[in-house]
Length: 582
Image 1 (cartoon, rainbow, N blue to C red):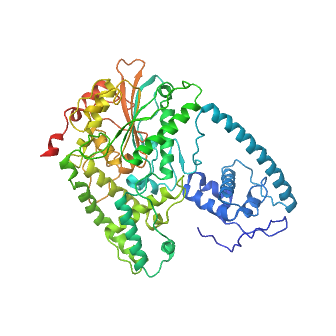
Image 2: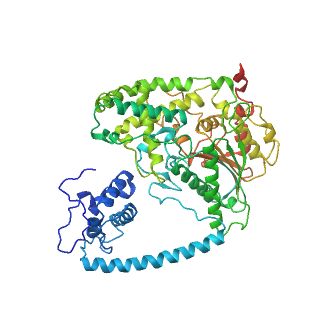
């Protein structure tokens, strides 16, 4: 972030009332902050926070009249000060600039240190007794700077919402034509969440590929300047496969949100939980439970001493084991290249221009079109790995424009549509097993399915109960896409163009970032309403009420339960499963 005018670095000396203070950039004028709505613009917020961290003394003296100037501050102190500057910009503090004398600074420091000591002691005392009362550890989560329980990830939008399936979850409530709230005359009687795991490191093969790419760029490029200067000191060091700290907190938040939305059921019921067998999926289920259970323990209206939920079923992800939370049992489908082919076609349409620009900025480097996509991948992967709250944007992100992120998002959407959705004749069929399990749960009846269900597990009440009110299943992005298409949620999506970007308005709400971002979640809810004899069903994908196509819907996006099930004829007939082995 560049500022006009000369500045002098903070040397640690206190400012007196007569001392000359370091000139502040115009962007720190509260009126300017208010005009730019900094508190709603994460990129501006983060840039300003970085300035506060490195100019703590000056900003304190100039803008926070009641806070003594600090000779220096670490990131935590700088962040706390910055929040006060933001609040002032919102009009919560008077616009009074007061410089403090050294004596005032010392006296106020002593007072503040004393108050802080008493406050900390009191908080520790309270925390100790809360811990004993709850019987569980106090839940620690990052401050709501970039992510909130209700809204998901907000920082660096809109670009961060265009990272395809590598976008962190963000709420689509404002993209819904139907209110997501539960009508006041209705009570929820059943809720199912189908969730993707949280943000993760790249898979093993991709991580190796990224490491080779970065190594080649560093070996062949003669100089790194401008936007590329960060590569002078950059070393690829991402992990493989497992959740990042940010991804763990995403699922804690998801558990909190699920409890809050369905608290009338959650207070008295324990959800039945399953997970597919990869470590990141299992860990996601465990973090979800942590958020759910802590919220329940904090709810004075919940049943005390009720058993905490556990993951009751974990499906092995291996050949020969039927698993409705991961694909793998359909031989012909597993050999399909339709998704990769569609992705390659569009990749070769939009990346050449980017590739030439990158090569100009990286003299000596020779890149392929695939390399361009890999460098774009690193934007998200680095961001969700850098901090627990996702507040540090990877410098790879700045190498690409907003238009190019729209193209990247569409590229990933093509891959999912032609790989696992309606663009592949066997795509929706991979979701039939879960859809038939859903029917069994909604109707409290045995599972009727001969596709990917595990008959041994689904025939036992301890591994597949049908009388629960709450269910949670944890899976992968690709399987979730297949489930959504099996349920007919995107029957209004026409075959996607492989040569030009189509908006979500043109795709009937289909986009990989809208369907399966990191920590994506779909809610299937059944409700009983006054004046209605039949129970009603509706589906929300990342808080967007998805119009149902197989049955007649009302103004709240709901179908009668019987009509909903009758509309799933593709699912009940087994779809195209018979073609899997021909």
